[in-house]
Amino acid sequence: MPESPEVEALARFLGAEASGREIRDVDVLEFRTVKTRGAPPSGLAGRTITGATRHGKHVELVLDDVSLVVSLGRHGWMRWVDPRADSPVGDPAGAVGPAPALATFGLSGDRTLEVTDAGDWVSLGLYVVGDAADVPAVAKLGPDPADPGFTREDFDRALGRRRKQIKAILQEQESLAGIGNAYSDEILHLAKVAPVAHAATLDAEGADRLFEATVATVRGAIEARNGVPIDRLKAEKVAAMRVHGRTGEPCPVCGDTILDLTFSGASAQYCPTCQNGGEPL
Image (tube, rainbow, N blue to C red; front, side, top):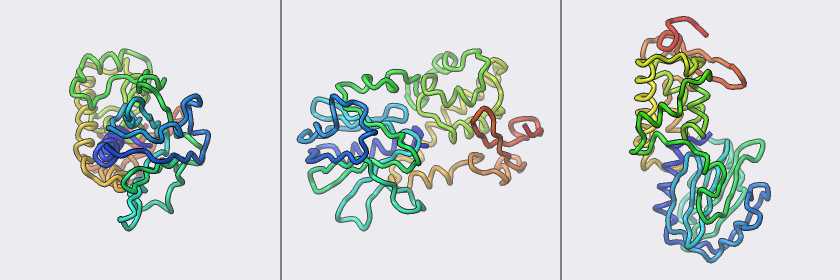
């Protein structure tokens, strides 16, 4: 699942490479991706891209007078096709064959932007709007830990004293924008908090560690992904994980074996020693 560090790198790439290019033609290959039927992507032909930005896990391409917001969903991504290159830029390294393009945008300068989805079901969404906040999921986003203005007060409001698992709150986009399953595991490991712990049970010291871990993990990953080619972002993300996806491997902090936990329809990888006093959950 794309998360804020990788989506931020994608938006920066598009801002640098696509800005100033005119959209010459649009081909939507999967009609279910179009979420604004009254303003289809085909109407973007003839408009010029002026920039790109990120909203949580969504990418906004800013045009002359409208925006194309791409909700990447669970397996969505983008591929940049340059005929001078040996292969398109955008398919993750190690992928088994290219992800199918669900929409393509032919750009001036003989470039093509393809919007892809590698999932078994379509989770990608395309919105043509006057403002990114017109997209319901963007309008509901909570504060973003990557934002320099993100404060401890923002974090405390998001966390609250709810009897809800902290891992779920970290992934709840209405509470905190941009974090998914992988980075929530990394945050909890760094904060030494169990994935099943409830926000209501967290003491002041634990809340301090969790806030610091959230900011450090998200911002550190954004810095680490900056400038990485977009087809390498997934591989770089996987390689940087300490516990997520590392079941059976030694914890890099204490050496205990990283375990997998499935609960409430979710999964987590964690270190029993670092996060639960040495006891498996």
